[in-house]
Image (cartoon, rainbow, N blue to C red; front, side):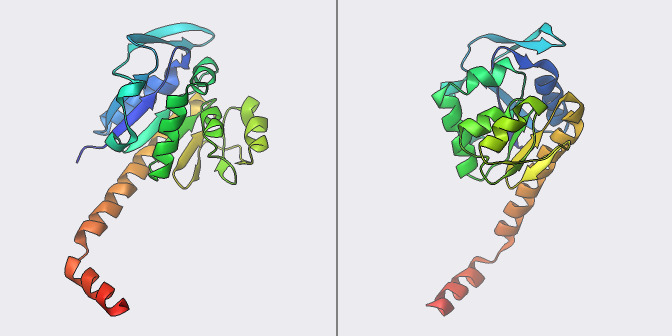
Length: 198
């Protein structure tokens, strides 16, 4: 079954942190959907100035965590700062987490994880200027290209994109393997085990 990744972004997203992971995911056969509170097109931020515009696939109100296997949150300073004020965005992040689905956040995007109250006691990374914010929210902050703690995948900057995206792909593949193991389990054996416990 084709895996589906939801990307949430708005104007001011770091261009490379949306475009490059999306391209790598699609090349790996993973379907991506871009959702935003902003309709039509949103424009990226690229090397200190406005960059390319991308078409939004879905309004943020039209998507549900139930329809996707993972969540990708690009950074950029403006993008997550706007999104963390949107209750629906935070609700979606919380839903992905409660379902145990991978959430990949890069650069300034871990701000959104703070807003969703997901970083306390977790090992994460992010852009250097938000390390204090993460620490104040109770996170164990590390300086490495990818930090993986349970379903959270975080990275620091555009240079980390290859490792960041690969970590997300591997998380999706691991979820596939878990599903296959569940399907291979003999229902009769499971029933017998339940009977013995009774």
